[in-house]
Image (cartoon, rainbow, N blue to C red; front, side, top):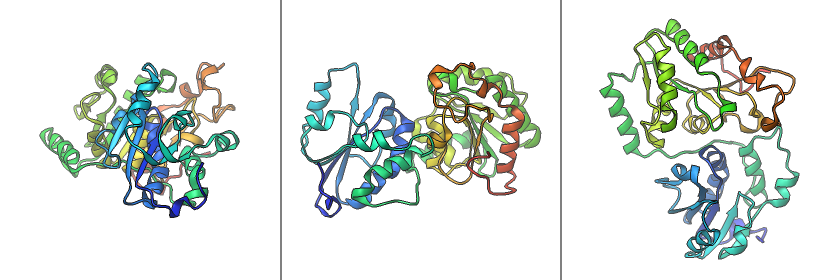
Length: 340
């Protein structure tokens, strides 16, 4: 549906059909950035799922965002999108939506999706490969998340009010995740925090998460024998969280959207992976370490049908994660993405 010389055409209005949640949309950002760099004067809109609203809202990349809600009448969404006639529609969801929308050129990836290698190809690279025939290859894969100055200032003011200085070591713990089967035990997060304080006595540790994870943060905080731990779960906006991560020395997290947010703002990451595949969904960047248990079913391809009761996550020890954290915090050498 698109000519091969698409890159040379005059495109003024672009609609990106994005994905459902924060993390998946962040993994699209290298591909979206490639298209934006091609059409620097074009105006971009985006369609996102309910859990992707915070990605699109107040994002300077997009003039307008439209929410895809499976519970609502699909014709309502089509009506909203058809208020604009687009020069180009790029559908990363691989849905039927482009066939109902007004657009001069429409880009879908059904064939590429079916034949692409998924187990050992990172999702951000797969999306870039989809658009490569039209926009060229991209070697430097980076996630993007614009942070307005007001959100940086808001977070800095909040930290100052808590008595936290720019020179303080800042460590972020993110114990939540999209599913309970991806969560490392809260007791292990608390034990890890105690180990971190034992080694880095003046560190400041922040617990983050969505509003529903605030009780989890409180439970962990109560298990930690130190005063310099703060539960910020549910108390920051998404972009304030990004500003906190941007100024932090380390994020220790489950596989989550927060992990991809940290990658987008260049915060070093320790990513704890159980029943998901870090080759496909792991953190992007160089100063990141994936911790996993190396059992025989790694990398996981059948998370929803686990016959081992998620033993992979249970076997990850506090000592494993602590050693990885020290490697980054002590900056002894450049960590690798995977320690296999």
